[in-house]
Length: 82
Image (cartoon, rainbow, N blue to C red; front, side):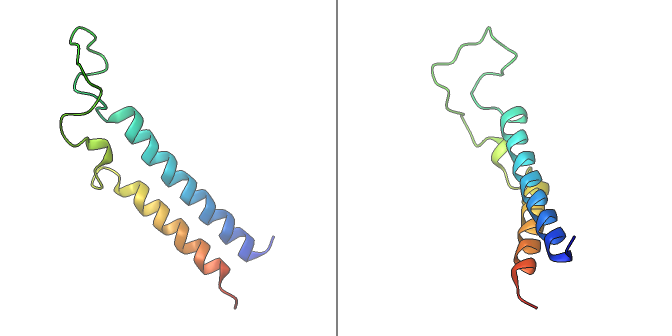
């Protein structure tokens, strides 16, 4: 296997892992509405969150952003002709 191909595959996997990690945090760990998902007694008139959700905070997603940045840099390095 060519070294350039291995770098491209590693970069693509890092980008994919970063996107999956950020999607996981947004879907499963963030409050998407005013009421808690487990609390079905409290009803809300809207699905909009009251404040900024922690799932979309860059501080909460730093690992996913770092994986995407590292994977993108590997993909850019692999495309440069030596």
